[in-house]
Amino acid sequence: MAFSSRHRVIVMSSDYSLTNEQNMVRDTVRRMAQEKIAPLAAEVDDTGVFPTAITDQFKELGLFGLAFPESYGGSDMGILSSALVLEEIGRVCSSSAIVCAAPIITGRLILEYGGDDQKNSFLPRIVSGDLTATIALFETDAGSDPEKISAYAEKTGKQYIINGRKGLVDLADKAGLIIVFARAKNSGVNKGISAFLIEKDTASWAIERTVEKMGATAVHACDLAFEDCPVPEKGRLGEEGSGREIAVRASGLNCILTAARGLGIAQAALDYSLNYTQERVQFGRPISSFQGIQFMLADMATLVETGRCLVYKACAEVDRGQAEGYYLGAMAKCFVSDVAMKVSTDAIQLLGGYGYMKDHPVERMMRDAKLTQLAEGTNYTQHVLLAEGLFDL
Ligand SMILES: Cc1cc2nc3c(=O)[nH]c(=O)nc-3n(C[C@H](O)[C@H](O)[C@H](O)COP(=O)(O)OP(=O)(O)OC[C@H]3O[C@@H](n4cnc5c(N)ncnc54)[C@H](O)[C@@H]3O)c2cc1C
Image: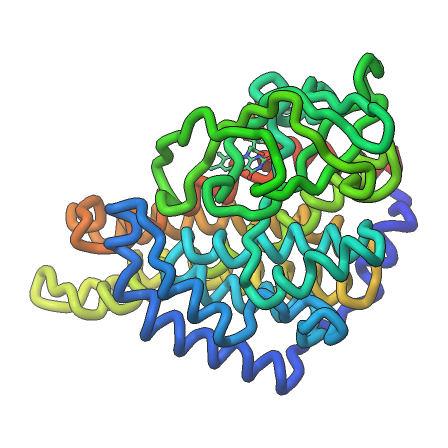
């Protein structure tokens, strides 16, 4: 069987070791997450309220800017550094990880597709954490198949007028900037999708509904309505009609950072299980002394470490400017989200009846793990892309 050229490149580049700086970032964020976020995580999940104190920690440590050039106030340390951060934050609180990730993804799209004015206007504020940003692609009838989106942009003179609805937009209630995908009015399916940078204070759009979720509850998923929402021509991101390409890149970035979050969830579930099984005594000895339990933990650890290799390698390729990094990122998202789901479910099993109770964080980890399989393009739809890559379709 002949591998495609894309596959060969992925196999050849294999260095994804961390620099001293990246190790330092990971250790600093691990300390901060354990000290400042972990004690709040259960309450954040219960109340669905996100404390600004956590965002302040992100700002203070410069976490929004790690993957951005110094010219915009960032520290130019690549997407791998952001993934390390999200892994550490994901270990303690999924809502916090999403709050940190969304502006990074949006900012990276502006960095890649934006004009100088757009970069100068938005990136310093995203990097500093003063501007929260998110992406609105999904619509009720356009989920896994975004080419069916019906929100439309009509060009009149030097502006576009946007009409339509978007669904499940993370953080729309907090965001000062949303990248909205809409198609040119009257263009056919697969045609004319563009991305628009819409600022909250200048736009005629409204939150129609905040949808209740089973996990990551402090990140509110909002349904939005755009009615004759004016966007100046200079608010279009990238070329007219380049929305599909930008949406694919958004999904690629999302996959990588979702995988990092999932990795954190899986690691946390493993850590908790290791501790619990050594403390819990049944039949006169710690349950960790039973070989059945040991083997289960060994499998969990193997899955977590394998996932870590995939996530770091994907990031390293992206940081080296290799498009294949995004392909690996889709693999990482599928693999690690399944690992997070399995390891957190196994953790509940290892805690027995107590695992099902809210006294322990593993049931929250399982609810949060499920989201990593669903959002950012479900794992099945990522498999479609992976298969296309394998066969050079
Ligand atoms: C909590 C949450 C937050 C979100 N935040 C955002 C956001 O901020 N911005 C945004 O734009 N969107 C957001 N989304 C939307 C998300 O991207 C979509 O839910 C996702 O793309 C799946 O679309 P869908 O829910 O319509 O599922 P559907 O497309 O209806 O899929 C249903 C099932 O069919 C499967 N399926 C579909 N097509 C295929 C195929 N070709 N082959 C095999 N199986 C297939 C899917 O895998 C899934 O299991 C969010 C979703 C959630 C749950």
